[in-house]
Image 1 (cartoon, helix red, strand yellow):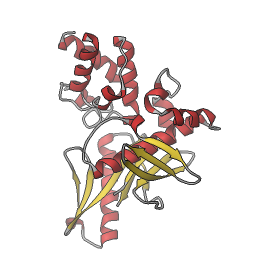
Image 2: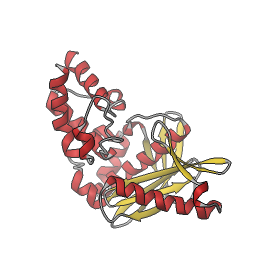
Image 3: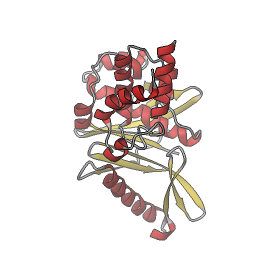
Image 4: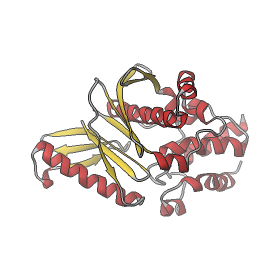
Length: 187
Length: 83
């Protein structure tokens, strides 16, 4: 099981205003609002925490198939070099990588290294991006499981949760995209 | 509020965030914000804040949980307006 989420930094600057009234209160717990307020770069902290929540949500919905919108319910706790996200009785570990272009988070049930493969898209057309990422995903699947193109298929559940079908098993996976960036992680 | 008036108001709110024009043209109560309109999940909160401003209501966490499609948005706004 794995959940991931990428934030394109220039896209976030362009399409969201984290300083608009009630924005932070709607998405973040009191503790998280404090972390944001005290961060050297509050903008980056907002989107780091957001990507942690989204990654954790994607992992959660693999365990408990469902669809809902409750970012504030996924509470982030920052440790030295990783994060913990809790939602009700659920808890997971999240690693985040921040570059000058994007922020990516990956959630796992146990502490693991980041495995997400990041892709930079040439355009913002959602259909084309989806095609590009699926192609890369299939290629990675073929390599990893040593199978042929015909033996691998990307499935999507009724909740939109993706997985990889390979001979004799279904492997959980996570796909994310934002602006000009996308990424995928195979469990 | 009448459903057709409400859906027109919602369409105006949603439009700046959509990334699939065709799905937006064919918008119905069944339209899903993320799956159909390709709205970025980071912008769902903006839609919620815009709805609050437009209808002068406040949405709680429980209301936000279901805000994933046009039908739920309409139901939530109507419930709040009639409260």
